[in-house]
Length: 183
Image (cartoon, rainbow, N blue to C red):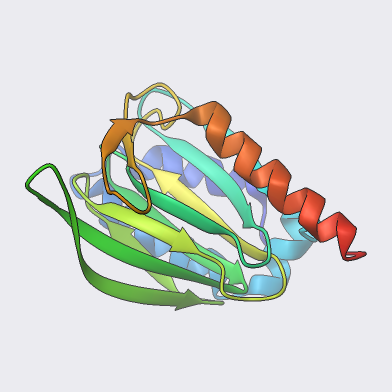
């Protein structure tokens, strides 16, 4: 059974280990190995959004729900991260800085039960290719909301400061589309 409080406490302990990202990755792997238990523990995802489960200076734990067909522009985190999918699919496109913009260098689909570590310098875009909500646990090695970050225009790849309000609008637009189709 996935217990949110126990999971957070285990992650908080893991960030004090020598290889914190590897320790957290093992915890996330154990959690998403039983996706039904995560759903019982966190609830069935019915809306797109970001639910903060824990936020501290050294750790942020999010329950992230991507709406059907949601496509999110390239962005960075400036801290390591571990992503674990407990429902659906999250397609990650990876980028490298090139001149004043970005160059795409790979794509990795993550499906239910998959776990992926991301380094502090990773730039990626996320897409939910499915016609239903994709749900994932995202764990970050720092204060995800308090760290200045960047995002890139999805077409021109021009870098700009990360727009938290724009992110929230994207999730709400996804929810409006979900509601319009009766879901």
